Image (cartoon, rainbow, N blue to C red; front, side, top):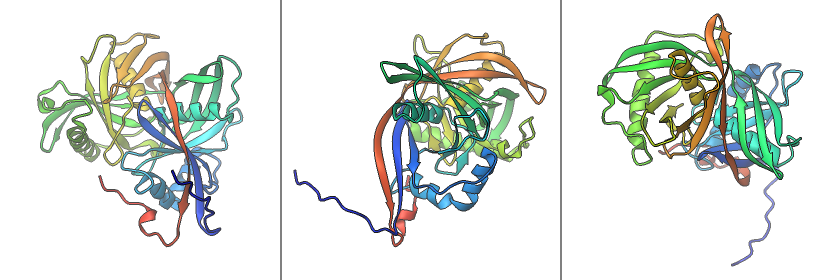
Length: 348
């Protein structure tokens, strides 16, 4: 091979460094340096500032040519609580989300392995401030390697049960609306309107089409609100299609279609949290009973209801979700101010 000379880019080019990982196949691009400071006394204020002032950097890092339509990212911030270890903002093809389970698992894995979160024994607790609230994660390590990450998510709850909506091109679709850090419409594919849906890695395009049709129909229907009254949480993040009978030892399989048609390769940590709330509310799952849920590519998360709680007077749970992440690379992205396409584009 030919050794390529070390090249130093011009000083006026912006440089942003990242560490990339994946959780159950779903990418996380953790921004390590170079992103501008985000002011704000709360994570929601930091999120709002990022949306108003640095959305162009989100597009440049998530979209092509540096990313792709299904890229996902995270920015670590200073904590906004006295006992917090860090804050986090999550970003994707559409904007800045409120919470991300696979992202929590990946950022804890990366942070622990590079020494940002010093390992203190077999289990190290990391307290993370997210736009949706406090998430408490645990890095489970052996001989210095983080083998698994679990996290206690924000309170999750079933908001609307057994709803029906007429979806253009599909007909009557029945769904549950639940919150697990973000709101999702949960749809069992075992119903007449969805008989043609198959949840596997050969049918992702039809899943995107169906998921987005349902998402748009639910968004256009009667509005909903988080019972705590936080307007920044009052949006539908995606549709989760559920298949109940996958394989022995597996509770179910689901695929999350979120943001602007992104497909989650993992089972979706916030999605699993909402599913735990639904199953518990319907009497299908007991306290501390662990279930395993597969993704569209058959990666798996385990989940359990760790405790009961309330949100704005509504019955809710504290879910615990567990999964595994792996580091895939380090990058220094360069931003040539004369590169118009480098500002980001999407071609799915």
